[in-house]
Amino acid sequence: MEDIKRKIGKFPDRLFVTGTDTGVGKTLVCASLMLGMKAVYWKPVQSGILDGTDTEWIRKATGLPAWRFFPETYRLRRPLSPHAAALADGVEIRMSAFRLPDTPPGFRLIVEGAGGVMVPLNEDCLMIDLIRQLDLPVLVVARSSLGTINHTLMTLSMLRARSIEVAGVVLNGPTNASNRFAIEHYGRVRVLAEIEPLDTINPSDLMRVSRLICNRF
Image (cartoon, rainbow, N blue to C red; front, top):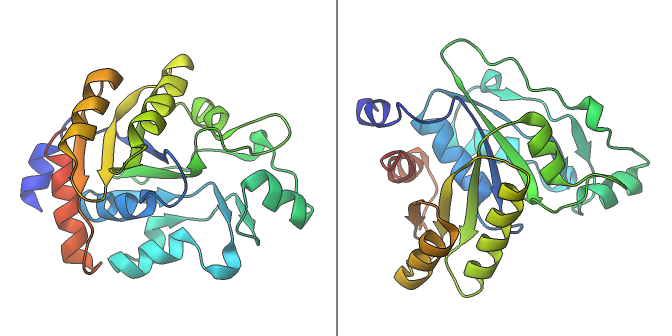
């Protein structure tokens, strides 16, 4: 743990974790950062609560206590895009409802988005609007496989067009040196880590992932 503490002096006090798509490993990255740093976690919008939530998954994977997790602002039943899940539940997602939680002294805050930056929240606003409103630097999580260059560069372009700070990129999947180079070169960004598929997911594995990410900050 001490090695990580020395390496993360420049790590943001508050960080928004987004993805190039759904299912790219955002929650895994959040869980690893929760273990590798003194951090608390907030998922503003959770769809598909009947199948379990990301907060519950991270708590189980890390073994961290409940007080390290803030409740979601919106909990929606169906595993759909937030705007569609809210409509199905008869709920309107209001941007004014989102407030950054008060972080305990000495702790960092990890905020996890739903899907990618262009996911709709309501008739007028997208996930990127929430990121801009919260005014947090962003860590982009992407696949390492074919297609990731296009998706990652588009995500970076959208964030920068809104003057949102990009903290870096994490690639999930088998290592691909060509894709990593292209993302760093054309995206003008650091790939902080390449996370190969994990045989198991436990605190030890998550700590190893956290070291990969934090060592490049």
